[in-house]
Image (tube, rainbow, N blue to C red; front, side):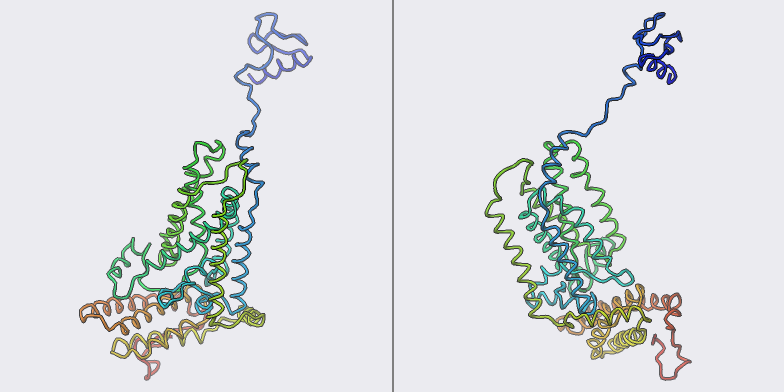
Length: 455
């Protein structure tokens, strides 16, 4: 067949060919076979039309792409700048995060409202992973932000980003179980671990706002599916489902480490906003409504006010280049093992003393664990878990409203969790401790040591 087609084409081009039907010779320039009358050239069904882009899609994209995406890059630069300031203050660890406005429930309950806003622009320095948290979120903003801003306009985009970000922080705030709350039991179930937090830790990140953009694009694709060009229907709407499902799966696998409540809060709020807010259609003329400009200015003013309050209540080393140089030297050298060991011992001793009725060492142990420098990813996770246990013990000691039976139940749960932590710590010492010259001190090695003391 292929040979017949090529020879027919040769006959039409001025060369002698062979008929694809009967095999007879076809003279140069002949349009039909003289023997059977078959037309020269390939059959119509084999002629493929030239692929061309959907003109409707092209027009839509040209109209949208020509719009600016100014605030996408403003927010991207702002997030990177704040992260750099935190590095100049000594790093994005708990103490510095809290000073820059990270969310923690007890501080919000004390009246620090700005902790609902500032966390949208803060990112955590992950142990052993550096600025991965910032890089991942800024990559997502770089990919999704221009679509939302160009489809809806800068005023609506700013409104979406701030409102969904605050909604994410609010969802995180509402899913922290109080020490005496009934949700403590639910927090240890599989679903509870996905959404609820049995204890409070500093929380920050633009993930809630980023999920808000995902929610906006998801509803946008469904809401306007009848007017979107065919080439764009697969990108938005149901095309966003894989992104949503994959991120929820990652959140489920890493539950307890990822703030899934903040992600879902941003996602749901973004979907709700997209249901009631229209987009700027291609070719649409006219200025943006005054109300949207007012909302844009109000959102930006809220961010400025939040960081003014952060500056007024700042409680960390001020941003200095000398702090950064010291941190670089620390990273280049060996990790500070001694402070880590001392903090771990202080936390364990505080829990041991609390079990015997003495709560005096709990608060100093929390402060010491909070200031311990990073050692390794697993070591830092163990340190953070121990700090959470000591914090729970401090909350039990401070709660004078607990009934004896409820106090006994919470003490038993704390003791069980502490025992599980000790087993994990021993495994870490066996697997990774030799790298840092950390070992277990047995009773026979020191008469002054307690049997359960660990270093």
